[in-house]
Length: 508
Image (tube, rainbow, N blue to C red; front, top):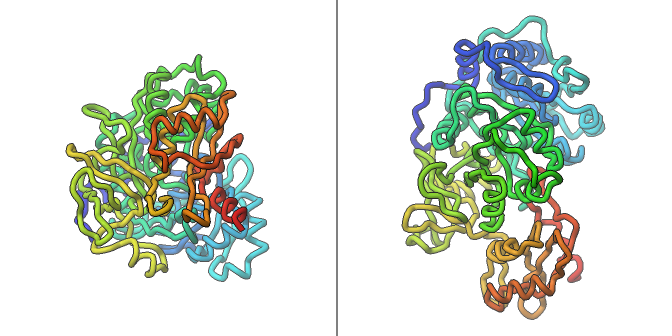
């Protein structure tokens, strides 16, 4: 295990107890319908913990949550932590079969779900031998079925090395894997990312991303707790209503993915948007094209702090500074107590400016994948996490991502990185979204295929000429597809898997 980062707390429940004792009367979380102080949130957590304990949940047990964002989600999640149990978030948009796959793999003993998800799980009980209770959470107080008699006063005696979450990867490159994260991982990464963010006690952070994803868990829940800040929750992201919510909640920042920023540029009311409370935007989860970066900053007058990280590193590994040099197109510098390096196929470090696989290590790196020694051996090598991302470091120590190794297109022996082409497409004002994938070809192995969503009347002839003026001939797409919207993952990233599957099926 890599050396620990010294923090003031041993566990997440200890952090909550400390904040409730220090600033219990100050507001912690709110949404459109309710708001709770730190003290009120702490009390609700201990009551729900009592209900979970009555269901037999104890230290080390896994509890699944299949719910949309709300303050009630937070109290159930932290009640799980209060008991020393393990939080297993599941996307509520998954089919019953998909949710069952995750909850079966994690060996959850209780699942707290929407009524629809609860019904779906009930139909598959024979596939969930460890699951003892399915709790349907609904109504104005979804946590009511879990509110116990009395409360659990003292939190479990857990420390930095104890597990607190199984967060499953999206599965876009294979079967979902449960990243095992500990209390120390969350606390370390909260301090690592909280340090460069220009935030202080009492500031409001907007939670737009879903809580089944580590970004919302760390950036807009744990970091506010560390700082004594506030959380304003959207139930879900809506570009058409986004600026109304900003006016209502007055956040100083929100955490986003590139597709959200692109949608906000073209959203109704964007030209009149009032962003006075916002100081900056955090962006990650997928590469942000330089063209979109410039358009957003110029239009709204907001700094973008682009970062990079994986669930396997809790959330964040690198980020561009708010003050000092920011490099457009870069994912920034490593946060404190993390090391990042670029390696070649043999596993040896490469020189600055040379592309290779991005690897990292630090106190935020996961304990491993649950019950997946094969995946652990492939991903965690000699104390480093191998990310599968291709990037390079410049002479100033800033990191740049080129692409995913699995996304690379090999055309007649030439290695082509789709992101380079996507960035060129995004430079054209008519392009709202773009994805480039390999199309099977008998002669060259693969050809370059572009899928674009357009915001004006331009056609692919114009885009092809745009590419020819900026790219080597072998990189220019040889086939095109215009769509209304590109497929997305549950966290808003463009999902290339269905695009590849459709092309593979068409090729016979």
